[in-house]
Structure formats: C-alpha cells, structure tokens
Image (tube, rainbow, N blue to C red; front, side, top):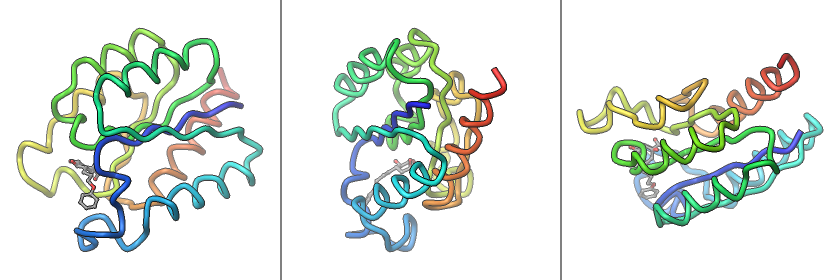
Length: 145
Ligand code: CA2
C-alpha cells in the first residue's frame, strides 16, 4: 500500500509554540513517528507539507493514480477550503482527516470542517496517535475493498 501524508499550514512549526495545544513533539518527530508506524505495517509512505492552499490542491491532484490512501491534516484550511475538499473528491482516493487537538473543544470557527465531507474518517484530539489510528484504519479499508 502506498500512502500520502499531507500536513497543512504551520504544522512545520510543531513543538516550537502552543505546546499546550499541539504537544511537545516537533514536525520532524511527527514524521519519524509516522515512518515507524508505516515500516511496521509494511506501508510505503510519502510526506508533503505546505503553507499554501494551491500547493496542497496540486499535490492531491498529482496523487491521482499513484497512491492508495491519503492522511491529511489540513490545519487552518480545514475550516475554509472548498478547494481542498473538491480536490479530494476529484481524485477519490480514500482519505482520513486528522487533527492533533480536539477542534470541538476549541473556538467555534474550528468546529466546522469542509474536509470531513470527503474524508471516510475524522480523528481529533489524540495528538500524534491520531495519525496512527488513521493509517491503520485506511490500511484495513484498502485491504477490505
Ligand atoms: O489540531 C489540529 O491538528 C489543527 O488542524 C491544527 C491547526 C488548526 O488551525 C486547526 O484548527 C486544528 C493549526 C496548526 C498550527 O500549528 C502550530 C504549531 C506550532 C505553533 C503554532 C501553531
């Protein structure tokens, strides 16, 4: 199985500020954590992080025909981006949405996710482990399909 992990704006700053919300781990540590999970599960993984909405749309489009599944933390674009939603729908690659924090316990503007309309699973409030849960869910989904 070939998995693409996409992280949106500012997630490259993990571990530097707002540790009370997003935890102590750095972005590099997040990637190492995901790589370990994928190694154990025999999954080939690629990573993409961008602060730019269009770049994320481009990467999703490029994934068409090349990846079996996508894990995405769209960060702030979760709450604003119809373009990312449409790209996910266009490629129709099974997708799981992950948020490190519990978006439903935070400001009201974070309660709505456009991306949930394309995701087959949304995981929030579990920190790095949310990515593992998403990966295992997608692996099982792809195998069953
Ligand atoms: O909980 C999540 O994973 C979020 O997707 C993170 C986004 C936020 O806009 C979403 O509502 C929920 C923000 C990521 C910003 O990451 C930072 C890292 C270090 C310092 C400040 C922000």
